[in-house]
Length: 136
Image (cartoon, rainbow, N blue to C red; front, side, top):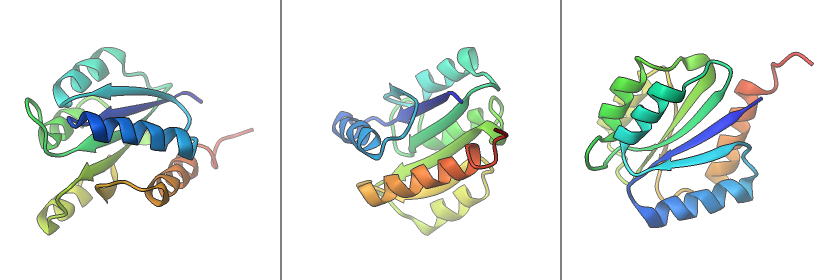
């Protein structure tokens, strides 16, 4: 099963640390980084395949196209059966959490900084959805 791990984050230091954390947690898949939602939407518009699984780490507060705008467009391109979005943010506003819980693609809300504990939980969630129920 092919995975694409899309990191949509404008902070290069956090992106670097997240990539290292993904390697350490042994999350499978090709890691592709974007500095905001616009190039990520352009990429998915051209490259989306129902045969692949998409794990998206999405920052909410970014220039050009923020996480909210990205989510609005993503929902017209991709399906919940092969996509999981993990929201990464430094602000844990209750209203944000409540709005995000209503989005079918959003699996979890993680407040920065992301830890090894968070990544291990994310790995377990991914495996539960995409691997445990696969025919052998």
